[in-house]
Amino acid sequence: MSAIEVTRNGNETSSSVLRRFTKRVTGAGALKRVRKTQYAERSKSTLKQKNEALKRITRSTEYERLRKLGKIKDVFRRK
Image: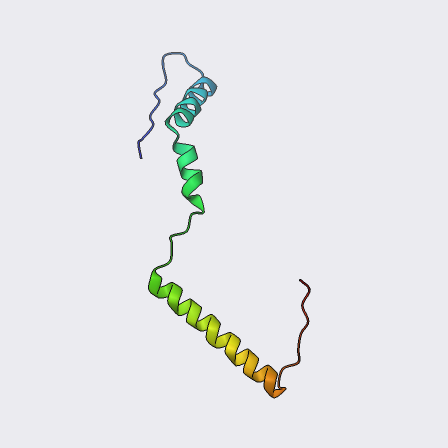
């Protein structure tokens, strides 16, 4: 990441300095890069994916077992 620096020239107003700064930021693509990575999530490792899949499978089989025993009522869901 590059540091963007703007210095005030002579009798330049603060609004024009701010305008030059925003132009440099957009030109460098810094804001686009930050917004792109702001909500990005790292991909899960294969071991973690396998463990989550095993948890889902065991949870669903336990649910089916309890449903067949009559301890849980059938819930009809809309599709």
